[in-house]
Length: 425
Image 1 (cartoon, rainbow, N blue to C red):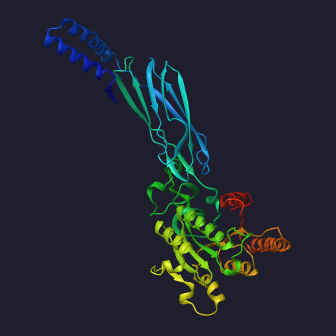
Image 2: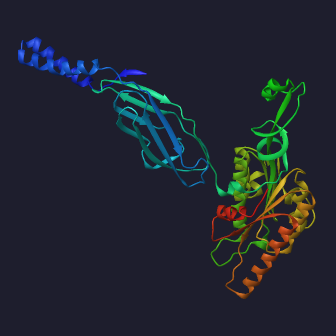
Image 3: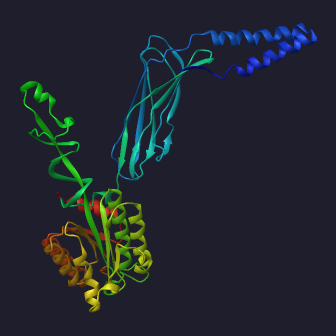
C-alpha cells in the first residue's frame, strides 16, 4: 500500500500561507521566501517511492516455554531488491496477552541491497496459547514524502504451560475431544494407521497418493485425542487437619489449595472435572466442563456445601445419606462415574487414606495421589509420623497410584515437575 506521509504537510501549509500573505499585501520578499519550502516539498513528493522487496523472518527461542520463562524473539529483515532502502521501519506484532520485558518489537534502519538487519526483544510467558500477528514493514523514499506499507504474515504460536499441566492422566477417557492421546484411530492430527476404505469414510481421509500408485482405496487413521472425566477427591476430614508447626497452614487447607489448582488446570485442558470433598461438611459435584464448573468447584472449596444448595448436580454428603459420620465421609466413592479417573488429594496421615485409594483402584478408577507433607522432623513424634507417611506413600504407589509428594516448602508445580521425571505413560 502506497500513501503520502505527513512529513511535508506542515511545510506546505506554512508556505501556502506565506504565498497568500505576499500576494495579499504585495510583499515580494514574503512571496519569494515561500517558494523555497514549496520547491523542497515538491522534490520530496516527486521522488520515486521505495520498492519493498524485503524478507522478514522471526525466530522464537522456545515455542513451548514454561509459565514465567523469558522468550527471546529475533526479527531478521533483508533487503532483497537492487536499490537502497534509506528509511525502513519494521514493527512486529507479539501476542497481546504477553508482556514485552526487554527491548522493543520495532526497528528503524536503512538497508543496502542484500543487507540484513536484526533486532531482538523478550516476552514473559504466561499460561495459555498465544499467536503472533503479521509484521508490518514501512519504507519511505529519501525525502520521507511517500511511504509504502507491507504486512508480512509470519505464523508463529506459543503454547505456555505450567508444570501442573504435566499432571498425568491415564488412557481412561470419554467420547469428547480433549488432550489425552489414545491408541484408537479416528480423526486427529497424529498418524495412527492405514486401513481398507469404507463407503462412509470422509473423502479428506482417503490416501490419494496411494490410490494414484496402486488404484486401491485406503483410509488414513489418526490418533484420537479425547477428554478425560476426572473427579478430584479432597481429604478434608477433621482428623487430618494438622499443621507442621504453629501458624502454618494445616493439611486440609493445603488439600483445598492443591485441589483448586488441579481443577482449574484440568478444566482449561478441556476435561470433564468433578469434585468430591470428604468430611462431615463435604459434598459431591458431578463432572462437567466449562467456566461455570470452575466457579462451582471454587465455591465448594471456599464456602462449603451450603453455597451450592441450589445446584442440581451437587449433593451434600450429610443431606441425602444416613448412617454414621464415617459412612458419610466415605459416601462419594460409589457416586463416581465408572469411566472417571480420580485425583486424590490427601496428606496420608492415617491408614484409612491408603485403604481409600485401594478401594478406588479396585473399582476400576485410575488414581493419581497428590499429598502435601505436613510432617516435621523437629520432634521425635514428628519424625515417627514422617516415617509412617513415607511407608503409606510406598503402599499407595504399590497399589497402582502415581504420586505427587508435595513439600509445603515448595510450590505445587515444582513438586509436579519433580515427580514427572520418574513417570511414564
